[in-house]
Image (cartoon, rainbow, N blue to C red; front, top):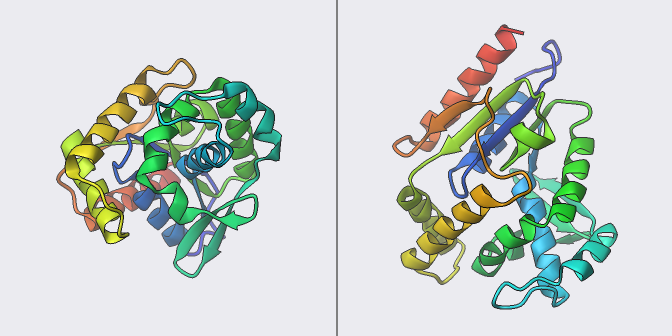
Amino acid sequence: MNTTTQPLITIAIDGYSSSGKSSMARQLAKTIGYRYIDSGAMYRAVTLYAMQHNMISDDLAIDEQSLIAALPEIDIDFQVDGERQYTLLNGVNVESDIRSMAVSNRVSPVSAIPAGRHALVKMQQQMGQQKGIVMDGRDIGTTVFPDAEMKVFVNASAQTRAQRRLSELIEKGVATTYEEVLSNVINRDHIDETRAESPLRKADDAIALDNSTMSIEEQNQWLLNLYNDTIANL
């Protein structure tokens, strides 16, 4: 789609872990010619950095002072290669590493650190200054871009999300079980909803979507239709 004759807008897609929001956001950005930013990948990259530098233990105890001090040294960017987008941590492709269960089990407590969120929110806002961006995460429509012209909040049952996540991990060759993934999903939901800094919640002006019974094609078409309606009503 050629967007040169249409106004550029900011599209914020929030929702629960493994709800399919990233896949939807990525496809919409590709279809309408916008830049896609996976804010969750940014928090995963910070988590991976903390793990690499022994700032988080197996029992999830975090050396917050050391991590906060290291934030200026953490550079996160994205690289597009054909149909795929990769996350770069200090210039290194860490896309596979940040999708591991080890990172998944630690990302929510790391994401709850206020100073870390402030740093990444600032980075995300800089990425979206020129509009023409689709960003997904937990607090995009409430904190990062509260004035976004289009906001969506995505959800599905915990069981559905766990099964989707398990299928993705199996496809990538990651050894895990449905029970482990479901436990991770439920635990992340709790941390995301109850953290003091930018908790996960639906923005008052966001459109809710429960995609539990929708196919990928159906949810992608739903999102594209909403975009077209939003542009038409500007």
